Amino acid sequence: MTAPRSAPRTARARVRAQLTAEIVDVARAHLATSGAADLSLRAVARELGMVSSAVYRYFPSRDDLLTALIVEGYDALGAAVEQAAGSGSLTERWYAACSAARTWALAHPHEYALLYGSPVPGYQAPQDTIAPAGRVAVVLADIVREAIEAGSLTPPPGDDASVVTPGLLAELGLPTDTGLGGRLVLTWSSLFGAISFELFGHTHNVVQDHEAHFHQVTTRLAAELGLPTT
Image (cartoon, rainbow, N blue to C red; front, side):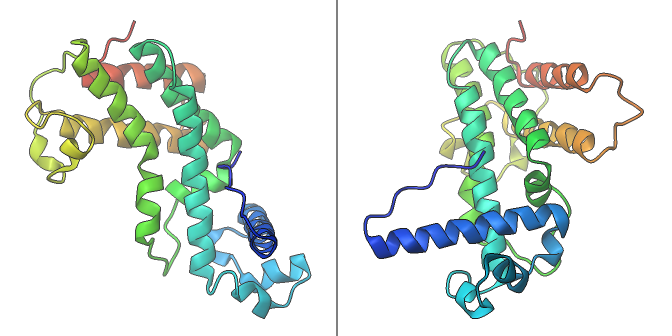
């Protein structure tokens, strides 16, 4: 599943959008066979029956193509989590959001590896990736904010909000005097840590039932934040 693309208005723009989408689709398939580090514009061009110079008109470098794949991946993951967490009680939305992230990762392992696996040597992610990368975290923060507004959040004491970048909590609509900053970072990193360990095989032959284990993880993370778990 990928994030929907808006329809271009002119015929020329539609042709360009179609070719851009085809290039990205082929490049995504190459992630499964060659990996992100070996992604090649020339190889993508050959598969499309295009000269490499034509592809460079759409993506001037491999890094530009990687960025397009990364943004599309983050957007697809974010859209899946947002849709899953769109309704229900706070507890239901929490479990749905976490489960949707895991389900998307298992269904798109190569795209997930591009987002959360080993960094691609020489690649520096541009600013364009920041907002898409934060979509899941925003969903989790929204659930926490609504729990605060409803009086349903009882976080354990002892957190240090100073670990979070100044202004971030306010940007997310969260109070800055609750000490939730560190717990939110812990929750976000632990959620994707659990998904990554499962997807990359680190818990195989250790965890017997990954779905049950993941539910335990998300329950503990909810409790860590002070969210109701039942």
